[in-house]
Amino acid sequence: MSRASSPSWLPTAVRPSVCIRVRASLAARFTELRATTGLDYWYHLADAPGIKLGGYPGWTQEPCWPDCEACGGPMDHLLTVASWEFDGESGRTWLPVEDRADDGWDGPAHNPADLCLGDAGSVYVFECRTCPDRPVGHWFDCS
Image (tube, rainbow, N blue to C red; front, side, top):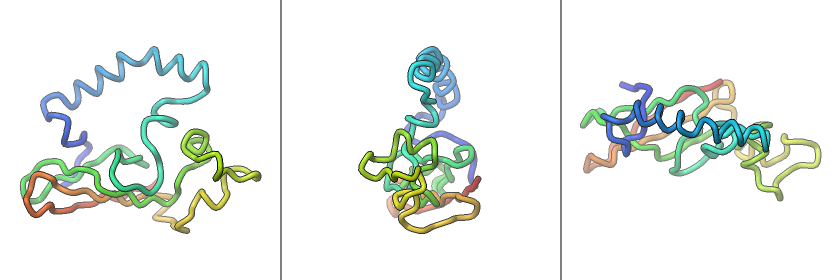
């Protein structure tokens, strides 16, 4: 079963309350960032988009960590296979300067794997680090 949740490294009892408190305590800084740079923290800086091994998933939809079928705990992100490496806005902060095309963001760095999963979606692969055989699970979403 999959559910909207938080990563397994955050203790279950504090997941929702920590996320709410952290976001609220940083709200003024996020507003200042947007006013001074035009960047939205959650969109431009919070997580890197694209294909990646490890790290935090750059979700297309609401976060959803699969539960391990063996132990029932939430699984950890292992791999993201994404349709694109970035989009027109996230490329402002995540696209290396040397990969930027003169004709806009749709250069070869945009989709080097030539993928389109659903309607520009991603496949997320997870593993359970608690179980000795490290079972895997997955989640797919698209825009």
